[in-house]
Length: 400
Image (cartoon, rainbow, N blue to C red; front, top):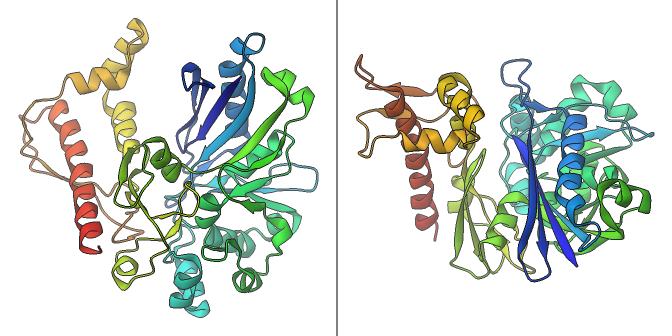
C-alpha cells in the first residue's frame, strides 16, 4: 500500500507518494501565478489551482497504480484563502491569499464592533485582513451577487475534497485560520457566525487532523491512478503540517519553515491566551498533533521575494537552467558572496506578519553603490528576511 501527501501552497502545489514504510516513491510539482489586479489585491484562480492539484495527483500516483496504488490522501493547505462555490459546484470567485489587504478597513471596524478581546479569546487570533472572516465580509459588502449565489465557502483543503467528490471536511488547524472557529471548543463559533450572518452549513465539517473525511468515487480514482475507494483524511494548515513532519511533537520544539511565507511553528501542550502573545499578534490554534496547540511567528515576505528576484533579475540563470535542466534557485545560490553584505534590506515587500501586522508597509534596499552586484542584492534580500525572523525568535522567547 502507498499514501500520497498533497500540499496546496500560494505559489504552487506538490504531491509526494510514500510507501507504507515511509520510502518516497514519486513526486510532482506545478507552479501557478498569483494575480494582482489592483494594489493591495492578491488572488489565485481557484479553477487553475484545482486543475494543478489534479495534475500533480495523477502525475505522482499513476506510475504506481498497478504495483502499489495510492489508497490514502492527506492535504496540507495554505491558510485563510477561500473560494465561493455555487449550487452546481461552480467556482464564483478567485481566492484571496494571505497578503491580500483589501479588507483592511473592515477588519479594524468589524473586530472593534464585535469586541477585539472577545474575538481573541474565542479564536486565539488578533484581527488582520488576511483572515477568512474579513475576506468574506468584503465579498458580502462588495460582491453581493457572489455572497447570495454561494452555497458554500471552502478553504483549499475542503475545496479539494469537493473537487474529488468527497463531502468536504476542514481540519481543526485550517479552520483556526478562518477566525470563525472556536479553538477551545473545536467548533464553528455561533456568536461569530451570527455576527457575519453566515449559516454553518455553508462551511465544511470541522474535524481533527488525521480523521477519515470520506472515500473518493471510483471514476475519479481511475482518472487519477488511485486505488478504488481511496480514502481522504483531514490534514491541516501547512505550517503545523510541516511541524509534524519535522518531528515537532512536544512542547519546546519548533520548526522553521521556508516557503512563500517564512514561518516558525512551535508546539505547546495547552492553549495559551497571554497578553504578551496577543500584543505581538502571535495566535494560538490547533497543532496537527492531537491535543496540542501551536502558534505561528511569520513574515509574509519570504520565498516570494526569492521568486520575485528570479523573475525580474535572473533571466540569465533562468535561461541556463532551462538549457541544462539545473534548478534555477541552486544556480542563484551558488553565485552568492560568502561574507555578509554591506547592504541593509527592510524586507516588507508584502504586508508584514508578526509582530507588526502592518498592511501598508514600505520596503527598502539601503547602502547600494555603483559597485554593488546582483549577487550582493540577492544575498541582502535573504539577509533581510533572516533578520525579520530573528526578531520573531526573540519575541517568542520573551513571551515564554
